[in-house]
Length: 306
Image 1 (cartoon, rainbow, N blue to C red):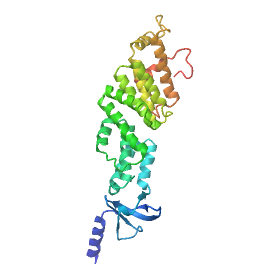
Image 2: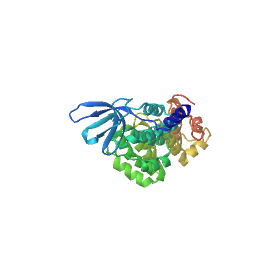
Image 3: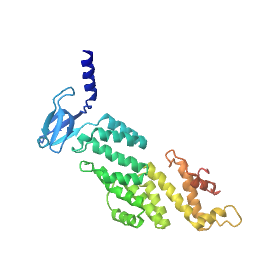
């Protein structure tokens, strides 16, 4: 008896976990049926009528107009990590969700496909452009139906150009997208990528203007764009030879407060001070290479002098 019981328990332990998500099958006339979805193929849907049912029902997809899948708790947890800016942890969690719900991939708006999209976003938020470009190439979009998400996949071409440092191509691409209607968070991304291109093309003043646009395009909501645009602008300021001269002559008899270098240095100093005052780093301190600008605060500067 004990041997048989042990064998039975072993067999049970080896059975794959059954995944069944509360869902609704909706017919063309608007009627719906509550089921527990277990997966799908290109032609069929597999489900049970209640969570304890043993027999799996197969129904032709042509028999239903659409399928609504409720959000799995694991996906909710991953989104919570993402919204808390814990992108590395969220990436791992979304990967688990994508693997767990891969049998749902043939369905529109499924959580395997959605989790894969947010893995891409985790990479973008961390500015891991090389990994992002590779992951985008492998990503399947056919059942991604949300317009903003589909548009974001298109915007990844800007990040691909950043990764390859194709500055002239990126500049042309930005021109082509100038009049396109896109969500403001994506406009901020485009502006940031374009600013990098302008910097790479040594069009310094245009780059400064575009970094400024990137910082404000979505009302400073994209923390990584805001932070990196501030770094980019400060980097451009420091690249001006006249700024280097103004720093060298600071508070000496040869200082010229009417020079372009002094004016640009004052702008750089104001941005460096604003970085800390306005929390532009989202918890990240101003790097030392830019923090050195803080000491060049003029006597007539407004606000904090640190």
